[in-house]
Length: 151
Image (tube, rainbow, N blue to C red; front, side, top):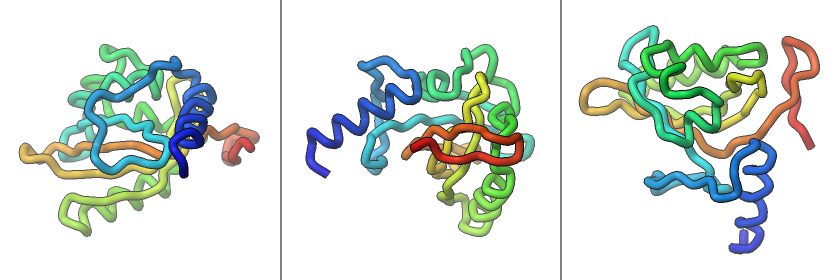
């Protein structure tokens, strides 16, 4: 993808997600999706996976203020439209692969928008889990159990 199309695609996605035109992540992981939009959250290493910290872009993407999310379970993203089977598979892969996994998931923002994203989990030195999300696509909920992509 050439630079102009990359820039146009990123701007379009930012608009779809309702983000400001100057939306950036200061310390992007070296490997990001083609759109470059990423966010990170760190949770405790065991269930119920309590949120310890998150990037400013995570709070903005998912619609939470730090005081609404830090100290809460990561399940705050499990609104109507969440693909719980994908979440379970991501965690299965994480434990099967010694603390590393990647899987396509659908979670829900505070306002109820379903966002499909690639979640990459990595065990940290203190046994916490860092999740880097990228490659976002907004979905529209048609029925409570069904999530379909917007085109």
